[in-house]
Image 1 (cartoon, rainbow, N blue to C red):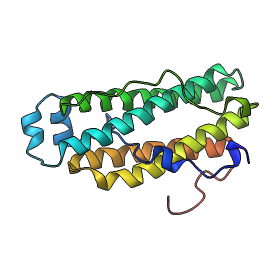
Image 2: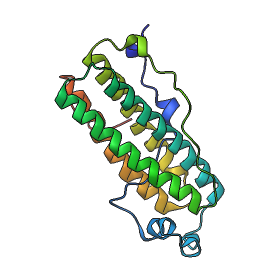
Image 3: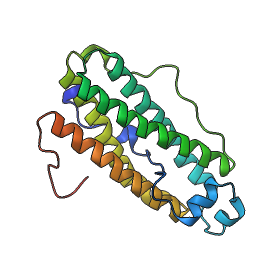
Image 4: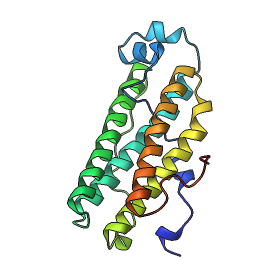
Length: 189
């Protein structure tokens, strides 16, 4: 069974979550602005939240690397390459906000790995690259669904739910680019 036929990698990205820079609660803004005392009033387990955020940061860094692999593959035609770079930009924004939030909560942000175990030998066409990216985005959606209720700080849950929407849009656009039904069902699992 090839990587492209395997079930989606939800487990690998289950803890993937973050914050969007567009829709942030007052507490999330306070965290990002360095007003830790104000943010602390919202309660929650900062240590657990840091662990979840760092796991999400690791997944964001992996997504950035995956989109870079796709961009450098020479398999993507111009409009699809532009799309991939746009999505990579979203992941870079997520990673930046996650790292800053981890620091504001007193943690140390994780760093990108030197290399990732991507199925390079199975990426032979633009469609292969799109399927690979769609699987990562599908895993991110699943991970956000699992992570949202885990935060001690409910404002971080709201921010994670906002990112879930972004990941779902990525997944839908990639499915459509593959000629598949963009939104295959009424519920995401």
